Length: 78
Ligand SMILES: [Zn+2]
Image (cartoon, rainbow, N blue to C red):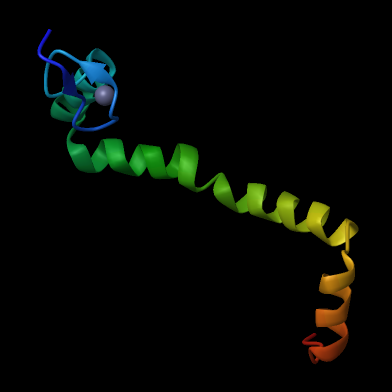
């Protein structure tokens, strides 16, 4: 046991990278890091937008008293 932590994901490992991250690195070597990063953007980051919209809808349904006070003092932008 070397007691390393994976450089990428902080998992305890015997190497600089854990097995999962080594696999990701191999994919990156195969396809190019730009391609892998763009894929991650498309799969994960782009999904953040609908998630945020859903969160916004849910948070608007539950209006706390402090939120209501803020909305009353804030000029409404249409
Ligand atoms: Zn890792």
